[in-house]
Amino acid sequence: MPHAFGRTHFQGQQADEEVVHIIHRHWFDILSHFLVVLVLSFLLIASLLAFPLLFPEILDAANTRLFLFVENTLFIFIWLFGFLTWIDYYFDVWIITDKRIVNIEQRGLFVRHISELHFSRIQDVTAAVTGIIPTMLNYGDVEVQTAGEEGRFIFRRVPDPYRIKDVIMKFSQGAISDDLRKMADALRAGKAAL
Amino acid sequence: MQSIFGLLYTVLLFSYVIAALFIVFHIVRYSLKRSAALFGVTLFAVVFFVLLFTNAVIFFSLPIDTLFPYSY
Image 1 (cartoon, rainbow over the protein chains, first blue to last red):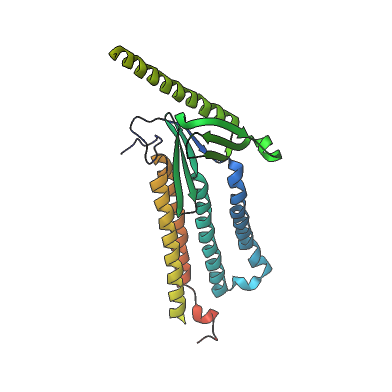
Image 2 (cartoon, helix red, strand yellow):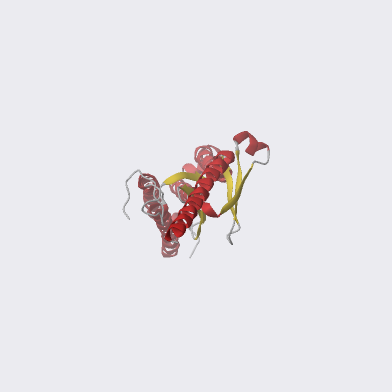
C-alpha cells in the first residue's frame, strides 16, 4: 500500500491502524558497537597522516598509489561495516500501535523475525533498570507477560522503560474495557432476544 | 601477474558491490519512513560510489610489475 513520504509505515500495518510509538534500543547500546567503527576510522585517518612522515619511502610514486589503494579499500570496508551495524540497530524495533505491539527483530542482514501481541492478551507489564549506566541514562528492559502461548514479550535495553510500561498498561486496560463492553452488549442483546 | 591481481581485484569489487546491494535493499524495504529510506540510501550510495570509483582508479594506475618485480 502506498504511504505518505514523511509518515511512519511498517509491513503488515492494517488500514485503520495508527502507530503510537516506535521504540529502538537505547543509543548507548549502538555506541558500543559503533565505537569499533569510530576507532578504526580514527586509526585509518591517523595512519594516512602519520605513515608518510614515519616512512618517507611511501612518498615514491608507486608506493604512494599502493598505500592509497590499501587505505581506500579499508575505508570501503569500514563504510560497509558501519552501515551493517546501523541496520542491525535501526531495524531492530518495537512498534506500539493502537491495536497491538509488533516486535521486529533484525540480526545482521539475513535474520529477521516479526512477532505481534494484541493488548487484550496482556496480563502483566514490568519495567526493570539494572546497573549504574542504565540508571544514569534511564534505559532498561520492559517485560510483557501474556495470557496465551506467546509467553513473554521483552523490550530489551529501551529508553525510558517506565513510560513505555505505562503506555502499554494504558492500551491494555483500554482493550480489556472494550472487550468487557462488547461482552456486555452481547449479553444485553441476548436478553432482549429472549 | 597483472591478470592474477586483476582477477583477485574483480572478486573483491564484486563482493563489495553485493554487500552494498544488500544494504540498499534493507534500507529501501524495511525503513519505517520513506524520507528516512531516501536519506539513508542517498548517503550510503553516494559515499560508496565515490570510494569504489577512486578505488578502481587507483588500482588500475598501480604499477604492479614495479611493485612486485620478482614475481612470475
